[in-house]
Figure 1 (tube, one colour):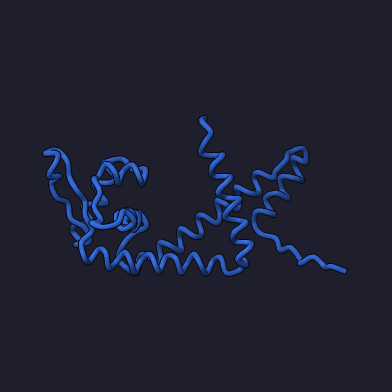
Figure 2 (figure 1 turned 135 degrees about the vertical axis):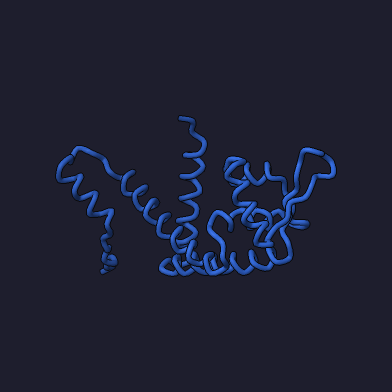
Length: 172
């Protein structure tokens, strides 16, 4: 006999049970999926914030430094490129850049090809910090996935990729 592992319940199951009691006509499968995605996103965001705080940066500041690091040498982008990649307004980006520049993690310099433009470049200190911070953040994420085996993690990644692709492709 092939016994199925006992399925544990979570807070989303309680919510779904309440809806089933008062509105049994509702199909709550989407609520189950997105409720769990939302709770997982919040929990992981909180854990990442704690990991990055050890380096004196917030999640938003991490995102700026990581975007510059991923761009490859010379780790330079324009503020507009950063804003577009991070889906931030230029005003929101300016505040982050100001703080990171004061901390010595990046520098802004004139664009030699455009008198009105700027370049944002990681400093050596910023490069060292982001390399450590990305490792710390990845360790938090890896630990969170430790309850899944490699095949399960791959399946979950594939399913989420497909859901994201079909969701982002739709216009409201």
